[in-house]
Amino acid sequence: MKNLRLLFMAAFCCFAIISCKKTEQATTPVNNENGTAVAPLRLKVNAAPSGSPVARYGQLSVSGRYLKNAANNTISLRGQSMGWSSWWPQYWNANVVNWLTDDFKIDVVRASMGVDVTPGYLNDQTNQLNLLKAVVNAAIAKGTYVIIDWHCEAFHQTEAVAFFKSMAQQYGNNPHVIYEILNEPNNTQTWPQVKSYAQAVIAGIRQYDPDNIIIVGCPNWDQKIRDVADSPLTGYSNIMYTVHYYAATHGQWLRDDCAYAISKNIPIFVTESNGSEASGSGHLDYTQWEAWFSFLETNKISWINWSVSDKSGELCSILVPGAPVNGGWSSAQLTETGNYIRGKLRGYAGSSSTGIVSGKTYRITPVHSGKSLDVSGSSTADGAVVQQWQYGGATNQQFIITDVGGGYYRISPASASAKAFDVSGASTANGAAIVQWAYGGNSNQKWQIVANGSSYNIKSALSGKCLDVNAASTANGAALNQYTCSLSSTNQQFTLTQLN
Image 1 (cartoon, rainbow, N blue to C red):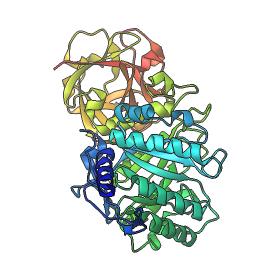
Image 2 (cartoon, rainbow, N blue to C red):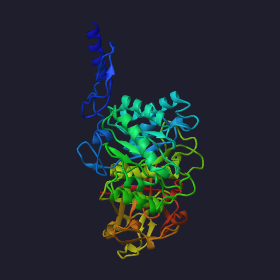
Image 3 (cartoon, rainbow, N blue to C red):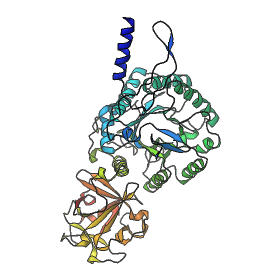
């Protein structure tokens, strides 16, 4: 009877676990009911949902400085971080994970569990674990990668080792799971200290999970990547290191330090980033933010944006105060950052996310006027002004939209297809004119097309500003310029009608 009962329990467990881990792997022995040591099985189980990130990429690994998929191809993941579980618990639910996956087109969600704040894991363990598991379980069910983030600066090594051992035992069989063992070591901690802590936590995880990715932080709030490059961890596989940037604070100097680490074959995963200042507020620096995106994409570095929160006045929050707690957010319920990063993620996910078919011809109509964009005088010359005019179907009112990679598009008049929309003089100023010019691949000729309800905002890759009909005029001949984005302004909203 005892043997039959054990067989039944083993069969039940096989059906109950959901994952798509490629291999079976024995873990640290445990004791059976007679006290005899037996090795629990890491079981092959059901695949992730078709088309999901985990279904596409499978079990991740690290080779040299690159993140690899199950087929050993180099990939990079892009995603969104939850806000602190301590202060925005209302968003830690399956509906939000599903919405971020389906609408924002994320590959990975970061579950940033507060540790030594109030409330946090150290003083509110049950509630914080429930929030964490809600996000992790939802991501696994959805086929989305998920980072389990020990979100604090201090080590709390004993507690961290116990926590990550538990997580590895519960979730180590799922290829979805990535471990981030310390959010941001601060400016009082040295790399040798962080390294010692990391070795202890990694050893705990590897008792139960031999292969999922582990991400290690570095001193000075994840900016001292040079220290890592000069003395990386050894003896473990599938280890990556994080850099955190806030574009209005961390500019070229930090990209240079990353480049140094890259030259030393250090695998980097940016687990937290934004266009704001490091405080989370101040201003959004689109020039530096775009420079970061270009650097990360060029170097195949995965990145995550901060954060799913609705803090009033905080630029890095993606939600306006009081935004629905179950996803389904309209553009009006997203902040400037939220709309921008949503468009960026959808752009990287491919033209199918925006509804735009690369290489097709479109009429572009300002929502406020109902007219059409138009190259003045049907000119084919460099410098001809882009304006609005009553639509007549001429080729100077038809535009070929072409995906040029990185979430950007080239917009070329059908009447002069070698040319493209161009911010005159590569200006970043409000009011700079939009003209046509021979396409050279410059950032003032690339555009992000961001869904805004049933219409779109069209943003300059150079400045981050929006295409704008001057003074919201409804008259024929009103010029197009760039202006700071105001997502509710209908003179910055355009409908796209495919013509072929």
